[in-house]
Image 1: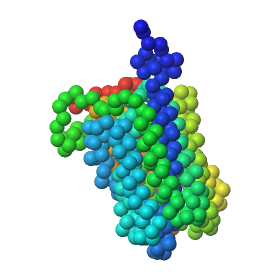
Image 2: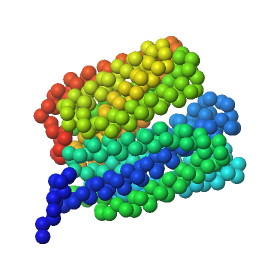
Image 3: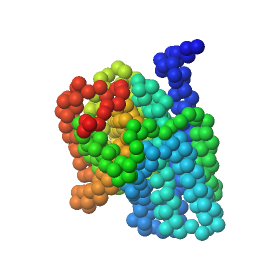
Image 4: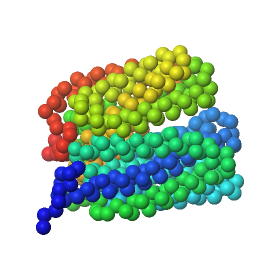
Length: 423
C-alpha cells in the first residue's frame, strides 16, 4: 500500500517525521539553552564574589570561544563519523556531569577560579558538539524547502531561552541560593537528553568511500569548503563578521556605561534589545525568504547590520542605541540562519560536520582577534571607535559579497547539495 503524502513536506517516505523531530529538538533546545543562559549569567556573578579584578572575570568569556577553536575541527570530524543523535545525548550527559560536579563544589564552598575556567571550557566543547550534531539532525529530517523556517524557529527559542528568559531568572535563583542556577542548568541537560531519546531513526552520515585518517578527513572538509566558490567567499565574510562582532562586544559595556552614562541597567537593556531583534528575525525569516530574493536577504541583512552598528556607535542617547541594536539583531539573525540553511542544503551529509567546524573555527578566530582589536582601538580613541569601525567594515563586506554573489546567479542555493568541484 502506498504511503499517504504529507501536505506539508510533500513526500511519501518521511510522513511528517520532520515535524516530530523538530518539535523534540525544540523542547530539548529550550531546556538546554535556558540552562546555558543561567550559567552564563551566574558565572561572572559568582566570580565577583572572589575577586574584583576585571581581567580575571573577563577571562571567563574567553574560554567558550577558545574551546570552540580547539574542538571545532576534530569535533566536526566526530560528527561526520558518529550517530548525531547519540552525540547530542552524549554532549548533554557530559555537560550534566561537569555542571553537576561544579554545583556540588559551589554548594560546599570549594570552588576556585581554575575550576570555573575548566567548567566553562568543558561546557563550550559540549555546546559545539551538540549544536553541530543538531544541525545535521535537522538536515536529515526536514525537507530542503523548509529548512530556513525550521532553523528560524529553533534559533528563536535558543536565543529567547538563553538571552531573554535566563538572565532575570538566573539573577533571582542566584539571589535565593548561590548554587541553585547551576543545579537548574544540570537538570536542563538531563531533560534535554531525555527529550532527544524520542527521536527515532538512524542519524549517521553515509560515507560513499571507506574511512581514512582523521587528518585526511579534515583536509577533505577544508577542500570542499574552499574550492566551492560560494563557500570560499562566505568563509571570508564569516571570519570578518566574527571579527566585527568581537570588536563590538569587547567594548560595548564601556560604551554604554561611560560614553552614554547609562550604567549597568543601560547595558542590560542594550543586550536585551539585541536579543529581541535576533528572536524576531528568526521568527520571520521564512516569510522574508518567500517574499524577497534570498540573495537580497543575505546581502541586505549584512549591510543592514553594518549601518545600524554605525548608528549604535554614533548614538548620543541610550534609546537610540537600543533601537539600533534591535535592528542589528534582526540583521544578524537573518544572515546567520540563512547561511546555516544553505550549508545544510549544499554540503554533502558526510561532510557537513567538518565544513561546519571549519566555519566555526573561522568565526571564533575572528571574534578573538576582533576583541583584541577592539581593546586597542578603545585605548586609542575611546569606546565609540571600535563600534563605528565594526559598522563600516560590515557594510563594506556586505557590498563586496553582493558583487561576488552576482557571479553565482546560476547556482541553486535553495535545493539539493552540490558535489565537490575538485571532483
